[in-house]
Image (cartoon, rainbow, N blue to C red; front, side, top):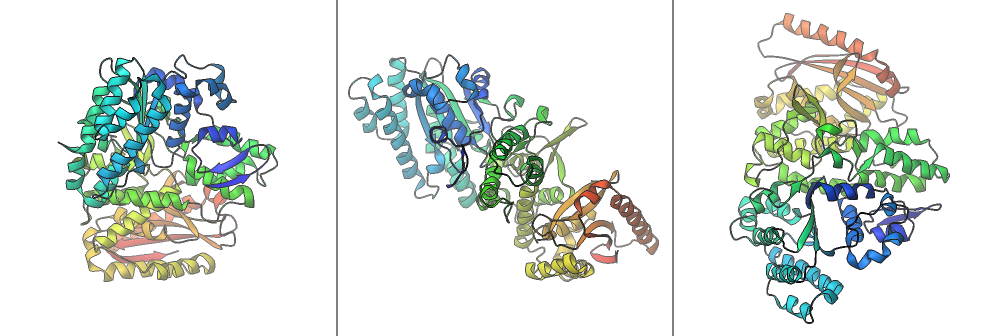
Amino acid sequence: MNTVRYGSKEYTYGLTDFARIQKDNYYYVDKTQYIPLIERAAPYFFLIRPRRFGKSLLIDVLTWYYDINRKDRFEEVFAGCRIVDNPTAEQGKYLILSFNFSDVNPMPDKVFESFEQHCGFRFMEFADSYGRFFEPGFREELMRQPSADAKFSYLVSRATQLDLPIYLFIDEYDNFANAILAREGHDRYHALTHSEGFFRYFFNKIKAAATGDRAIKRMFITGVSPVTMDDVTSGFNIGANMSADSRFNGLVGFSEEDLKTMLNYYDAQGMLSDGVEDIIKVMKPWYDNYCFSKRSLNEPMYNSDMVLYFLNNYLPHQEAPDQMIDNNIRTDYNKLRHLIRIDKTFGVNASIIQDVVANGSIRAEINSSFPAEAIVLPENFKSLLYYFGLLSIQEVSMGRTILGIPNLTVREQLYTYLIEAYREAHIFNLDYHELEDLVWKMAYQGEWEPVFRYFASELERQSRVREFIEGEAHVKGFLLAYLGMVGGYIIQPEYEAGKGYADFYMMPDLLHQPDIAYSYIVEVKYARRDATDADIETLRREATGQLQRYAADPLVAQTKGDTRLGLITLVFKGWELVVCEM
């Protein structure tokens, strides 16, 4: 955890201890207004959100709110929060049993022992906290039970007999299961989540404890996908999946209003060297634009971890960080990569990522439940990308949901995945350092043509890639993935300008490279191998006219700064670059 102390409110990045946030006067983005909504919505509440989106802090807030042992500290700990003036009748009414399965070691030879150990410690903490509500000897008898599921059954049985209500929290329920699926494959995962697998059996116990007049009265479970829940419960039938409910679109993460309020606070403390709107303008394309409900298209959310990473760097230095992406985010996306890169021969799902990279969006229906073995189906795969935060709801058009890449942070991750998919399938590979040097000359010396000639020469030399060049989108996919990984430019595919869409705009990254000299709009056209010279000329003229319209758009003038704008036409005939002009 990195902490910087400023003014009357301290600021922290990485802290999920709600009581400490309040006690030590850290800035807290209040989410307590959702507590009554959660109560009314479902007693057994399931929330899926991408990694590092504030789920763990939310759970800590809820445990402090409902814990019977902390009832008398409610006004102290929740001071300044919306809920403090109008608490619900259930405040401070529950015994809290909580698990965080990110603590479980996912190595196959360690996972059972680690799971048992984690659960054992949590049962011991429960007994230490609430032993006075039970008969003498409860703690000792609980800990004598031979397994986690036996301890759970005993605890629930005694609490039911004594009419003691329990609120069960499970954070990152699918963490170690996902890791096993990614590293070890379906067989190991299946043994964990099916038939007599210990994880499935544990969830069977949870289902039983939440049935009828048993002690588990409320439950709150978080994770990053519905896959494991589908497998361990044969469909989520122990509660309500509220992930797509519009009432909870803003339950975690920051709305733009949240962000403005925070920035206005620090501005009032004299801690911002730039205006609030200027800072938001910098942050928005990198961290914003997550939408979790079709009815919440006008309420996009910022990833809270990304925002706090930015502020943790901005506040002490009074300027944006050199690296806009938190390395912790990259690490987490690398973990997800092993789950989504499942077709090493560059099959349908790798092509889905390529299409998303090239076009910026894709039509899809979000499936709320599917087993791990069905991830390979295209609609499930698109849904998985959505749950992981790699795609977000962009619009609903003609009754179909359109998923798009939410921001530049995610776009970089998808570029990485696509490049690795090309390489692992032995389809295409470029010398990254040579390309980076060429793009640097393009940016600062205006030498643009060698970049595309190099790319075209590699398309011709690496013969296997020709099998995958079926049209403009595939050519663009190759270009965008590699150009997006080098510095100097923010690559904007399908850039809306001049009442049309340029194939991509190489927008100068003036924030980090203010002395960059050139920017470019690129229009890519594709012709079949049997195209005539007249066909090629028609495409060339079409591209030239489009580029002139794009260049006249005010959005380009606002973003190019003092750079000289180049308009580049590329026409490919199959894999051959036959027109390369500016």
